[in-house]
Length: 284
Ligand code: SF4
Ligand code: SF4
Figure 1 (cartoon, rainbow, N blue to C red):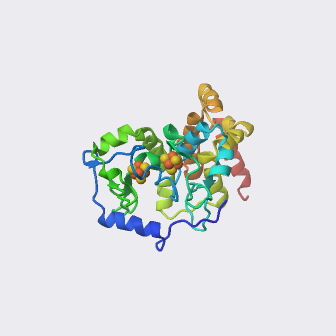
Figure 2: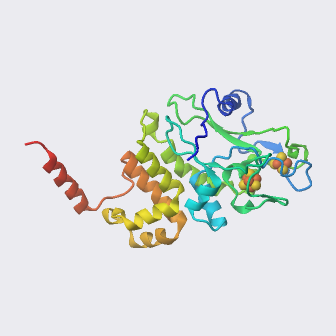
Figure 3: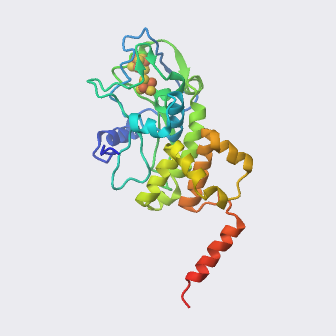
């Protein structure tokens, strides 16, 4: 684990977020912008360095598969995992090379070397997605797109016009968004909104189940976990070999075990055993 700091109120990244909420024009799916990126632009490859790319579980799943690595190997080699005392949920950041330009390890002369499996933030660029927390429920505010107009990027001088929707379709963002929404059922859970904190052990459990899928699979098949729930045999076989199925299972199991949601059903004999144990522990 790295001791990299997470954004705080004084952090430039958090200040940028505040600025985006205050000043950036908000775009909807039908709004348009001009942009093109291709090897002919004078800035080609200049944006793939010295950036904080926050990875979601599905990003890691796709990248580790693309690279033929286990999730554990991928995280060891390509991720920074910042730890901070008041951290609510695990954070994983793509590790840049330690060269002068802090270039992305997947950058090649011809562009992104993992293009079809590049993570969500790289697909979105030059669009960003933000949401305001200034809502009555204080949590899930208005979501909107905005343009990251960075000086280095000359793509805005190219003539091609897109609507936001066309860009998202072209970049294959929808599939990533669906997984992102499923992850938010955990990472933006009401438990946190109500001020809840996970213990370090539970935080670690969430990290392993979401990000270190190969380690999580070992745990699932070497423990009694599967025996305690009513789970379809076909689905068990699927999660043995299929990472997407395992990640779906991980999200359901975490919602059950961390937040008490009824996303899974315990076997009746296990429920009875728990009741019995609780009765035995009652004082006379
Ligand atoms: S993953 Fe690809 S697109 Fe993203 S920063 Fe690295 S080289 Fe660039
Ligand atoms: S800076 Fe902009 S135009 Fe240049 S390579 Fe990056 S995304 Fe493309």
